[in-house]
Length: 302
Image (cartoon, rainbow, N blue to C red; front, side):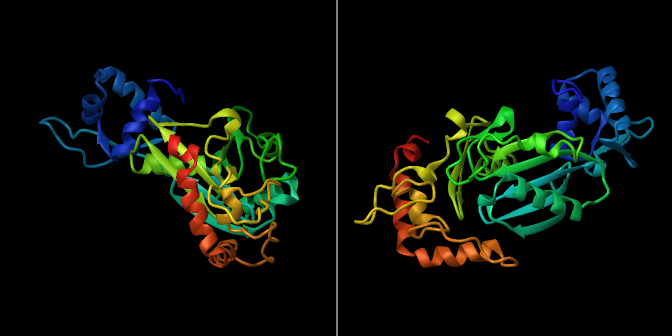
C-alpha cells in the first residue's frame, strides 16, 4: 500500500472513525467522487475494507458503507524486558488476539532470548497472515538498522541484527524499537496526544519522548535513557549499577536496585511479581531516586 496521500490516507479515516459511506469519505477527504471510488475499490480488493449493508439513502439507492477489516492480517509483537517478555498476535487495529508471557534472562544474549520469543510466537499462532513483526527491547536502538546500540545492561546484544535473525522464519518486515519509545507512541496514538513523556519503571528505568507527534530518539537512540544518568540524591557509599557505573538512577529505583545485579527469577516465576517484590524491598531508595530523576538535567530539558 502506498504510504503517501493515496489509499493509506483514506484507510486512516476508517481506522479513526469506523464505518463510513462513500459520501462521508468524499466530505472528510475533500477528494472527488471518482478518486474516492477508485481508492475504495482498491482497499476493498486488498481486503482492508469490507462492504457493510444498510447505508443511508439520499433519494436513490442506499449509499454503500464500508468498514475497516482489522482481521485482514496480524502483527506479531514482543515486549522484551530484563527478566521476562510478553508476546502477542494483534489485529491491524492493535487489539491482541492471543498472548503469552515467559521468564528470561536478557543477559543470556540475543540468540537464546530470540529463540524463546520465536517459540512463543509459534505457540500463539492464530492462523492469520502475518504482515509484520514488532520487537521492543530495553536498550538504545539504532532504528534504521534494527539494532541495539551500546546497551547498558544487554550483554552480547550490541549491534546484533534482530531483523536479520527473524528473516529465515518470517517473510514479514521487522521493526525494532526501544520499549519506552514504543509505549510513548502507543499512548500518544490512543489518547491522540502530540506531546508525551512516558516513564517505564520496572527492572530497568527509561523514558519515551514524543514531541509534535514524532519520537525523539537522540544520539544513538539514548534520548530517554534516564535510568543511567547519575542520581542527585545518593547514599554515602556509592551504589554500583548493573551497567558498571555507580549511583545511576536505576541503581536506586530499578527492580534490581541492590548493590549488584540480582539474579533473574526462577523459571515459572512471574517476572512482574518478582519485580514488584524487589521494588518493595527498595523502599525509600526508590522514592529518593524518583525525586532525583525529576531534578536531573535530562528530565528538566524534556
